[in-house]
Length: 354
Length: 286
Image 1 (cartoon, each protein chain N blue to C red):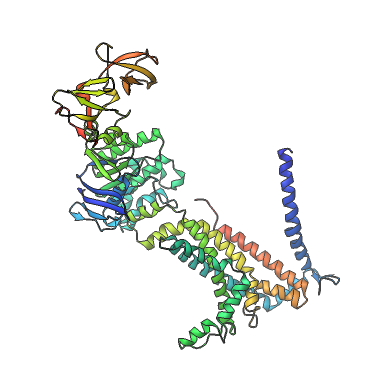
Image 2: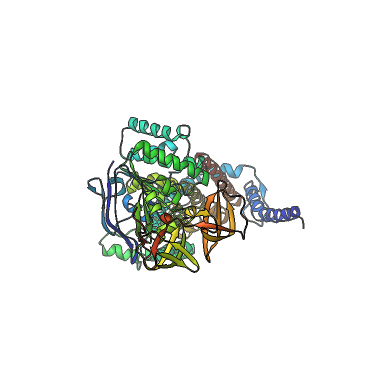
């Protein structure tokens, strides 16, 4: 159990910078998710914590130790790989025990730990098998088990669920969350899937092109995205972003006029953001006229794509059966749910203090 | 043409070629071993198993069998050990790797005659570069072909030189299929480089190792050209294997039946050896 500190950790391959100075402290027992599109540097950062990738500059500490120059085996970390990386010619038991054997642990203690991990992960019946004889979900459990038996200072998980089908992914997600609650060890988890990040994380680190965009609790990131990139990346369906201007406390884009919260300090070119689920239905007289174009029934909810004042918008509301394409309805932009971003920098402009 | 006709068409051609070029000569060779014949034009005389009895009673047969086994075993051990070593080196990233990979296959591409002539030239007593180098280091001259032990060592050396590239290429291809993450997982698990070799690399190479050893064993046991060109089986039969002995019987001693008998025994021994090999090292897919 330990705190992990990254100080100005940087990685460059020749002239190409993969990770620009990352500063981050992962608290003891915390579940931190690195989230971002492919090539954003999230996996590289994780691999630098693991010691599989050398650090170009900066310092990595686990607990009180500076581990920057240490080999992976000397960092007391355990890692779960995207393709599981199980030893194909070893049985499940031997896969689980291998790391402990290499550390010359007493065989009786190894057996206790392996049996305990197998029980936790429901692998008791498969210990004599080879990885090839298991399903994808079971292999992923073995990979988790291999990390678990080590009782490390920190678990590092590199897109562990990417190779699983959608249904299994949801189940394994729950198992990982439960595992984290049970063992209480810090976990650093890399994913490009924002739903995984939202559901698992205590804190999310959103990265893009080697830069950290925002660090925050899932709902914090959802409620107050730091910039346009985070606004577009977090949330499903994606946030509506409309480019326009601020004029006399009003947001103006084409013929669309939206009232901003009182006291908003903004002017000039901005982007207005509002999540599809935050647009409210109202009468046409009270709100903005919205023309329905495409209707997607999701079951409990209805997602509708259409136009208001010449701008394309998506709205997500509780199920509506009566709409048809071409129909006009009224929508309202609740002032408290609006996000404003400077067009030039993409940075968030605070509208109203919470 | 219906698909059935097509299948039978291809099958017929394949069978016909196999029959004409492999089965028929083999059957003919085996049948020769039951006749006494001193040339291919004279009238053969049926003698039953007399050729086999004569061959098996001659000490030179057992001597040749032992020589063949020593030569094959020695060549394979060095080819495989060096082949794995070279493959591991060529699998690492270093500047000019592709060039070195290309160059390393060269000995295998050269005709045997060229390799043998080059080797003989290098160790030539008068002008050989190796001879001169040995001389310059103040060491006594090496008798490459004169003593029985040295002659055997020379044939093994040349064979290792020629065929290690083949083994290297096979292992290099196999190494490239080993997922990098296995090595990373093992690094996290606390292994040293040597432990990673024995716990990951070697087990991952096992299927290709099984096949390579088998192929090399068959080829080395039946090897004729290298030995013939280097030593003609000499000195005094020290490097003579069954292939050379069979040739000597058939074409130098005008004992075609005896030569055929040796070849047949050699074929039978090899078949049994291959069966045992597959029984001990099954090609399981795990």
